[in-house]
Amino acid sequence: MIKSESIFHFEEEFELESGAKLPGFQLKYTTIGQLNKDRSNVAWICHALTGSSDFTDWWKDFFVEGSPFDPRDYFIICANTLGGCYGSTGPLSINSATGKSYFHDFPLVTNRDIIQAFDLLRQDLGINKVHTLIGGSLGGQQTLEWAIAQPTVFDHLIAIACNAQHSPWGIAFNEAQRMAIEADPTWKENDARAGIEGMKAARAMGMISYRTYYTYLSTQSERGIEKVDNYRAASYQKYQGQKLASRFNAFTYWTLSKAMDSHHVGRGRGSASNALKQIRAKTLVVGIENDLLYPVQEQKSLADAIPGAVFESLTSLYGHDGFLVEFDQFKKIVRKFLHAETKNNESVLQETPYDFKSLEDYNQ
Image 1 (tube, one colour):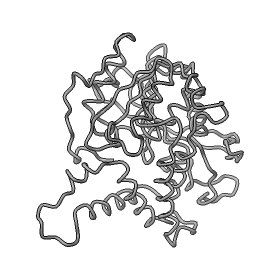
Image 2 (cartoon, rainbow, N blue to C red; image 1 turned 180 degrees about the horizontal axis):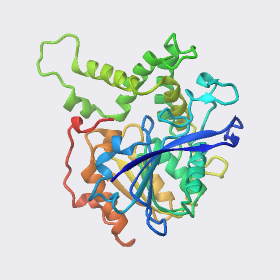
Image 3 (spheres, helix red, strand yellow; image 1 turned 90 degrees about the vertical axis):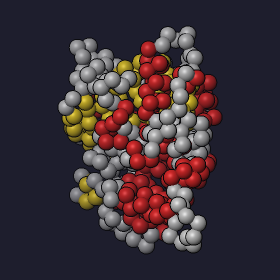
Image 4 (tube, rainbow, N blue to C red; image 1 turned 120 degrees about the vertical axis):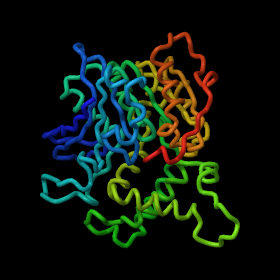
């Protein structure tokens, strides 16, 4: 299948939830497959914190021939989030009102702002119905907001490793990472590389929340007993920081972590429970049993609150990152959800052996 990358330009003033305004914006989006005659075969993906619109890069094994979302049958689309750095308007973009990059002046954006931008793209493409809306982590938060804001648009919703409101635990993790960025003496500069050393430290902190004790025990244990320094786990943290620094920037990391913190579907709607009751899509909520960042109880609570929702869980050595690794488990869960009768809610995992993947198979 041919992959297509495009840019959507919105030329009008765009008011954000905070009251700030952008003089317009653009979204980069990636598609694979073709729309069918009645445009009913759309699968729309919302990516995680440091993802891009190119889902064939970071989620490629889930959108291949023979998968639940086979590109021969579906038109699959993902847009880089507003506030991103992979072709969409974000802190490094040129502010048309000033002719300079936003940098520190880029306004606070929330998930509600982000899905409103996505919805303008959807309308521009003439897509009135989306067969399945799917996303994990930050992207999962966005799917919930979108399914609440436009309940008649989505037939199916798959929300993975996310929550109705970001927890104090999750906010604390993000604030610690932003403190690391702030501690970088270059952070105050208006330069694309400002705060980059701080972001490396922030990423190292984040990795601990994305994985588990057993991830590190399994993959980063020493092969001998004589070392007193230069441990594998230490070098792995530095590697992860450098890896992100080669493709991301501290301004975007800051902006999107703030968007994650601000997530609360109940804001302006009375309560999270009231908001989730507005979802009309047939919903699958997926949790990861040993997820430190989004504990599985958060997903169970979502499934309890969304009318008719089904809950399933993954077991993974890799904690929160498991939805990006455990493709066999995930495919079976999704395939059953899409094809089972609504009365049949038997757990797929009761009949599926676990198949832990090697960390080398996962390229975040």
